[in-house]
Image 1 (cartoon, rainbow over the protein chains, first blue to last red):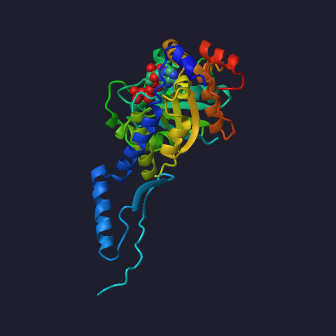
Image 2: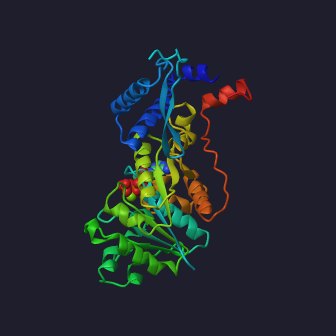
Length: 89
Length: 267
Ligand SMILES: Nc1ncnc2c1ncn2[C@@H]1O[C@H](COP(=O)(O)OP(=O)(O)OP(=O)(O)O)[C@@H](O)[C@H]1O
Ligand SMILES: [Mg+2]
């Protein structure tokens, strides 16, 4: 609401704190797990590859995220499984 | 009496460890507690000048450890606060002149006589850090609301945990409320969410900190200053008091005042 006044005063509203927080979240995950973003990505891909050897998964709806619980990192995977299309073996 | 040993450390340098150590020492001593602070930053001593005691140094920490003087001889008594002492660091020696077990022995000798032993640690993860943390009962990590400082704080908090000196408590220093308000500085809540540690103090950015360091009169000697108040609050929290976190409101500028007049209650 004071935005137009700030504008009048010639101040820019940049809101750079959000960028700092988002970037720090990722950096801290990398630091704490000692995994680079690329390694994390390839770990996810391998994981899915192994799982899909046994069951059919909905790869578009898969979510694998590093989360934080206190100072503990946790890898959370939510992997929807396609309805069993009766094994034909 | 059996002192509590508090070590003040950080990941990144220059975030305010020495300022914090000096001011907590002053605030605790002003409250009638018996305090000794030890400069653990061998080779880069600074606690003496921040406390304004640099002209009274005869012996230092390394002299004590190497047996060139008795512990008492290296303790400088403050003239403003009767129960405040400093053991200065050596300026011309290497940090390897002291070991973690030397520090444990030294603080054990002091524990009986004091309520608080405060250690000003150097930044980083090397010998000086391990020396300073070895005797700690509680470790305070100082950081600024800035990307690099928060990142390095996370690393040091992890190290403190793995040295079994955790959980560390956090002091967020140099918070600029104006920048927070306009969304250009991480808020205390942001930093706490990222680091997931207990907060023990928020210290505002305050010109009085530099003005008082110019004079060698720590800002906590004047509790009317905002930074001084913040350090007094932290000292009381260390003593176990439940002190609410202070409102870091800055003086409104003319435009903020105007906008409140136009839409009272808004903002
Ligand atoms: N709350 C504050 N407001 C304004 N200036 C501050 C504040 N806290 C610290 N400073 C200034 O920041 C600078 C660094 O502070 P200080 O020497 O305490 O940091 P440090 O962590 O001990 O540094 P080092 O890692 O080199 O030992 C000093 O010039 C000090 O005056
Ligand atoms: Mg320092």
